[in-house]
Amino acid sequence: MIPMKKSEILDRWTILNMKVRLDDRVRVEMSQYDQELQKIIDEATVFPMLFIKTLCALQEANSKIWVLEASLRQEYKDDPLNTGEVTDVELAKRAKLIREHNKTRIKAKQEIDKMFGENQDFKVDHASQ
Image 1 (tube, rainbow, N blue to C red):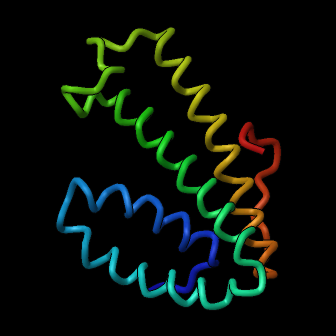
Image 2 (cartoon, rainbow, N blue to C red):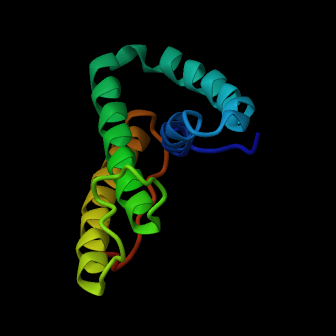
């Protein structure tokens, strides 16, 4: 696996955690990230509650982004947000919501970077900062 910061591994793990429910082929990749997650958990024993709360915030943000993006693609027929064609106004509303959830996601990743003493990623003049 390519060396990644812990925040990136955890971000990817939360996304794979959703994907694996829909696509069994993701299980192999998920198991690799599960192993990495275990290593990170072992290191997080100094600040377990902060780590758990931050990981939950990251999972929640990614879950909300996932739902909104899926609704834009109209992936699921039983999706309550799937009301037919997505208008430009509705697209803008959902894009704005995605951006807000992405702010939470980035904040959680920065908190993880801080916990483990890793360099934080900062985007200059970016709406999610």
